[in-house]
Length: 198
Image (cartoon, rainbow, N blue to C red; front, side, top):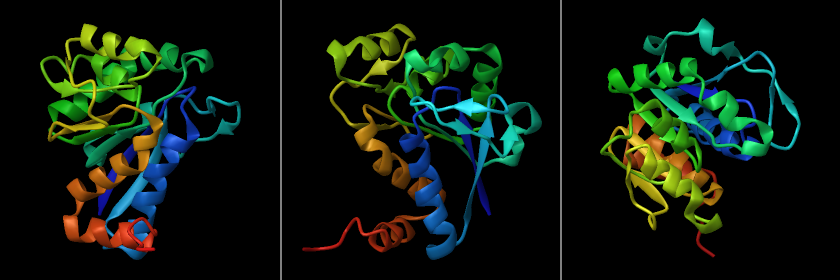
């Protein structure tokens, strides 16, 4: 069984978190059955960007990176306190441990800034939210990332980044493909209705 740590940071966007639970959950029930998502919070009660409360299964302080095969991080909003929580040293160290152990890391939208803050994107191709006059992309470049501004998803092998919430499902499917296979991922996509022909 491949275990995925879904890291929930205060102020995260629920829609970006749900794609990981849905795609990898569909794989558990309808695909090859090999993936399990564990929601790990930075605190015991988290508030999403638009104010509903989420209780994670585990706290970051209660788990070991060695328990997981991959890390998935949804983005969030500054106005909801996302960066205040995300830029803490405990979060950065948790991410660095995943990176140092060679585990796959997938992020959506501004979650790549959390990776940038941790230092693991220095010299690596990456992207982040591309609208609002490129403000977030400039921040990512300032962290030392080799910015790819016009590519919706940047797959660096170990690290997946993307440039908007619209990429969320494709990021989740990219992660599933890395953890299983192209054939299995295509089957899950089909079962979820993504490849139906009109």
